[in-house]
Length: 214
Image (cartoon, rainbow, N blue to C red; front, top):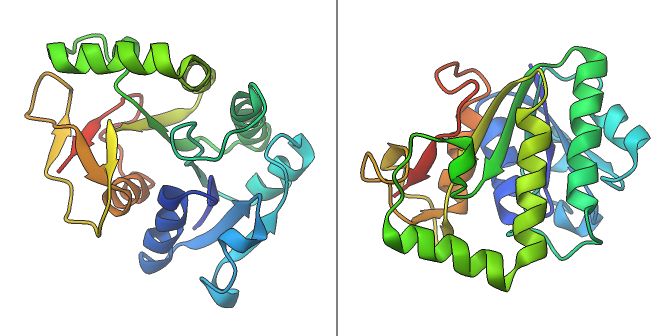
């Protein structure tokens, strides 16, 4: 089974490729900067270098795959032109729909609109407000990316987390909703990636946005 991964230029995306490869998947990794993948996987992983805002390049990367993991995230990737990651996500979704690829896994933050039954803590609400005030373009871009995905006819799952902690993975301790299930504020790139990779064959969270933490 082939899985295409976008966002391989950031730590979570690279770790997603690692996890998929270890699980025996055939992986197509899409990178913007070839240095992101130089020497990391050798010939074991197909690497495409391109511009994520180029619909033809995105479509070529999706062709032949049965699932897509989009690790593009304004919190993780280098600053881009306004709306670039939204356009990239739009191209990814369009390419999937054109080729009948239904399984999509992406990343998200503590956005309550995507999980309306949550009861976020006061601290989390303050955090969200502060981030929206300090980084409005990043915040808006993330919300727009999520709207593109959740409004499409795909089998999507959005893996949500608040802060990416440094260090090696320790395993996801909590999965659920913010304000419930003891979900905390921190998790590592390796654990985010491992959980995302596991969703390729998992059906429990289709059409849902599980929050994860240590």
